[in-house]
Amino acid sequence: MTYDVLGAGALDYAPCRYGNSKLLFRGPERRIDVPYVAFLGGTETYGKFIKCPYPALVESDLGVNCINFGISNAGIDVMLCDQMLGDAANGAEVTVIQVIGAQNLSNRFYTVHPRRNDRFVSASTLLMSIYPEVDFAEFHFTKHMLSCLLEVSTDRFSAVKAELQMAWSARMKLLMNRISGQKVLLWFSDHPPLEEGPVGVNPSMEKAPLFVTRKMLKDLNSIADGYVEVVATPQALAAGVDGMVFSQMEAMAAAEMLGPKAHGEVALKLGKVLHSMI
Image (cartoon, rainbow, N blue to C red; front, side, top):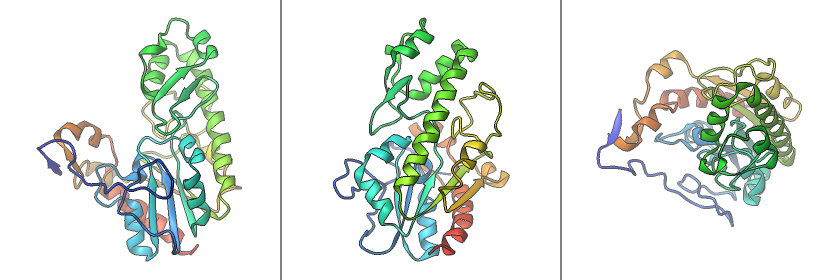
């Protein structure tokens, strides 16, 4: 384990911007006027606490610029709304899209921040009517809010989960259809996608990417040019935070992340697919 006892900022992510985007991405900045592979995704793609996340590892093997457009705690909305991201994906040789959870997107029940999609903004009249006993003013993050709704009523939560799944599927199809070039969908987690079941089954808030099932992924097969499923091996999970860089204050957050060994497993499997596409 590597950590800095002095406080936050143990790892320099060399934040950078591309074009007119208001978003900060992980650097170092890569050229976009030469052939490149674009990586869209969330915290895992960004590589929080990881010196060399899988986009950087793939670049070393592939010999082609790999641009990390991962955003910590991202939802699909920020990928759809940022014009630069859309242009970058369309200019790439291949775009790799990490499967992220369904909780951080605006839907009929609640609205999220347009750039920081994990931030809860407001509940709709419909959601407040379903949960009249809940004070939504106390929530700032989507996962906290959803966890509380699940605790209040599993039965009522099934309607929320179904809405999120439908919104996720529609939003993912829109995102992928907007990308004109080759695109690969990437599942990266400590477990395989949940099998489809009745709404309300497995409503756990622990199985990230939240609420995404295998059937939802299969529905995207006709749009994707490739699908890579990487479930971290027992060896990678047992390694824990070994090789991660974080401060003492970040230790709990780091313990929830997949480590460098798991990123290596992604790079190995994903690299083989990308080699055949470029």
